[in-house]
Length: 324
Image (tube, rainbow, N blue to C red):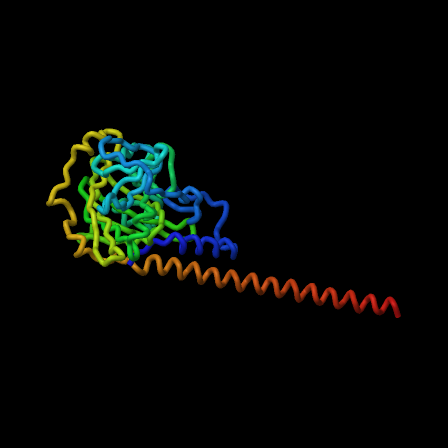
């Protein structure tokens, strides 16, 4: 299964930095995370933050998270809008993410991003995992204190389908030492699960190959400590491209014939070859490189100390010879 853990990502980054294996100086694309412990991802979520059930908003820039929340005992998947202060929780039906041409990125050369459905050099619209001015910065969070207290283990974020032109893909990229890791794709018929640890804040890349109105249906599901299972399904609305209005996205309806209508209980644990192995391989490679780096450092220290010891011994012998 694909699983997100802030603690694990921070530990990996710290290990690689300690061993000097993080590559410095190279510019990273907006869809790459230069450090998993990015201060921008550190936030405090309070259950006392206001809830606005009535206002309709268009978010064309700034930070927002999709997050489960318990409201009077009812489990809801909502938008935590951080573009205002204090942060406001909103029903997802009342939110449209406006993705202008400022979000256009050119797909890099090579085959690493072929899973997006675009070719190298093609323009794609990206809501990126690293913040870009004039583009929404959309992530997800499992940091609500009431959710952390009530849930018995990770939250399942389930992709149930995409409605819109072209292809939709969501992926994560761990800096310039790791390749892209696909989370969700509209080309797979079955629903697709991500396991997100409690008290985690994550940003990924939301990629659209074609402008238009895009609807993405997601379910947040959890088992509570009292043994009950809770879940809530919502549609995330995107108006992609300069010629598409936010009102068009707000008026769009999710249809039962839209792609991937699998029930959350029937969801698969994977997205092709990018499920459990993807993060495991990344962590394994990181640990392997870290071990190599540590060994190299230890060897270097031993060599330096040995050299210094020999130099000291030689100086001592020379001093004795002078005294004699």
